[in-house]
Image (cartoon, rainbow, N blue to C red; front, side):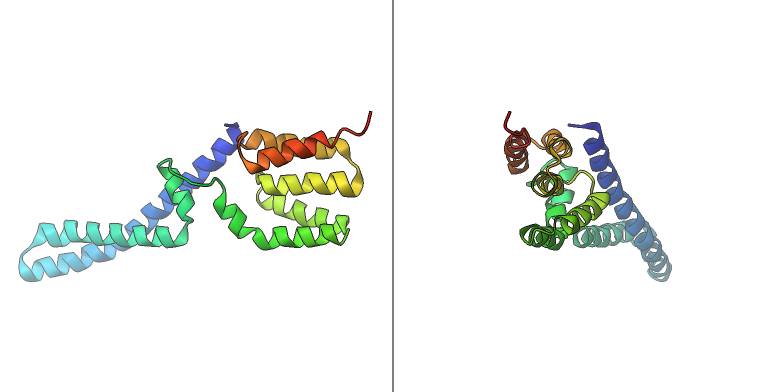
Length: 178
């Protein structure tokens, strides 16, 4: 796995864990204060002050994390992600459609601007890199730059993935007839 991809996964994992801790603490303090008041009124300090707030804060923080983050990313925390970068495909689907429309209309300058904007947001997104390579290849005949895009996709993807296979096929077409 390339170091940059591993770094992005670690950052994503730390972001999810950090969010959980933040929400847990935000919820634990008010629940503990309510538990303290209830415990003082009914003489049950340990359960009301520590156990119940821990359970409620943990449960609600978990629900918030599940709602806020992609389920695939949460499963990746424990190594059970089904599709790598599923959230990227969903988040950028309209942009990918826009790029496809621009390419079919032969507006390669507009398509290149759109894909570059997408790559600034998600620089390791194989689908966008494949599209950029296609734009450079078909619209501008820039074989070297297109080949670099396809090589990057191949380094980011697994050999059995669709992105890898597409990049491999397109990379072969970057060598003009010799």
